[in-house]
Amino acid sequence: MPESKLIPMASKPAVFLNDTTLRDGEQAPGVAFSLSEKLGIAEALSAAGVPEIEVGTPAMGEEEIAAIRAVVSLNLPMRVMAWCRMTDQDLDAALESGVSAVNLSLPSSDLQLSAKLGIGRAEALSRIDALVRKAARFGLSVAVGCEDASRADPAHLYDVIAVAAAAGAARVRLADTVGILDPFSTVALIEPLARCAPIAIEFHAHNDFGLATANSIAAYRAGARHLSVTVSGLGERAGNAPLEEVAAVLQVMHGVPCGLDLAALPGLAALVARYARQTLAPAKPITGGNVFTHESGIHVAGLLGNRQTYQGLDPAEFGRDHSIAIGKHSGTAALAYVLEQHGRHGDRETLANLLAEVRRLAVATKATVPAAQLVRLFDHIQAEFPRPRGEPCPSSC
Image 1: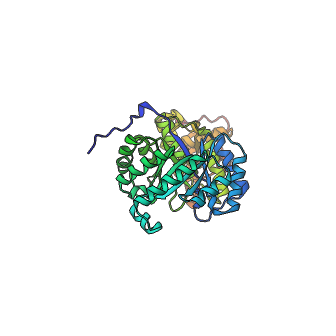
Image 2 (image 1 turned 90 degrees about the vertical axis):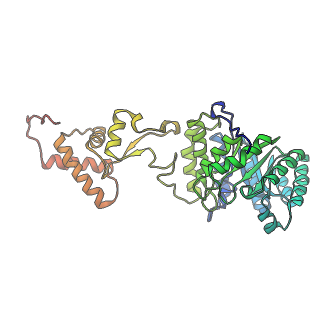
Image 3 (image 1 turned 180 degrees about the horizontal axis):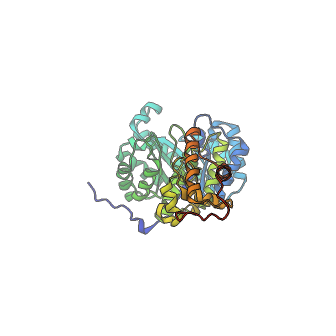
């Protein structure tokens, strides 16, 4: 086995993100973006600093071509790419759409070559050579997509990369189409290819085992300098590698330049969720409503004293802040903090009575207690058990 030559994170070579929300993301069941929604998503992706989008599949017909043309006409500071099968018809449709880049895709595993196209490796290489040369003659930036690369013979992938490079491709996309890789097998696939490839390697992850983000980071470590992502991981089956997770891990955790405005990502995720008619999961990393919200009394007490006690990711990086939820697991420190924000101050006995009522209510409703309701409960307890004027607060307050 050849010696591993993983790139150390300390060297921090930049990564180039290709967002395919408008193509692979729209393949999620029931998702169909209108033209105005596609334009809005493209503009939001550009505003977030995404350098390249895969905007659609021109071979779907004139309506799709018109939508792609509309995105191109925005003249956004990003590269606009179309996805194509490795055929003349698909490439001609892409040329009609006005894009500057194409992903020419072909199965790379023997299973898919045989089952989908009825061809072998030699014919696949011949098609790649011919179509890439044609696209290059028209001045397109070309990526060759290797569908099902995670089940392909590495020897064939070496040949695909060599032929694609000789024909004028800028990069080769290795796709874990059925989502069967883990970070270790991702490295085993990518590292030897990236070490020898004369052109850039891109990795496209699917999330069937919940490993798309981890696999994308592993691919970067192994030498892939282009990563394919979608907003919130939107895509068919279990989806793809989420843009916001991949960007956060690389930029925040490892200091790898991605060129993204991380503070724009929560708004971008909310926009795509709304257009996709999907709910953004409260616990969704980075962008979910609850990821910087704390209820546990122990955690809240720690955060109020020093945020670093229970903060591994600074919400300010994403234009967000911590919030405190009042519920069954809250403590009196959290209650006192929220009450103080509303001009209320309670002694220890009152807070203890209030906490008991909060816990009863949270269990009964299976929900948190909004701040306004907490204040009403406090005022009720104060009115029901008033402290006589002048009576000193117990020493335990």
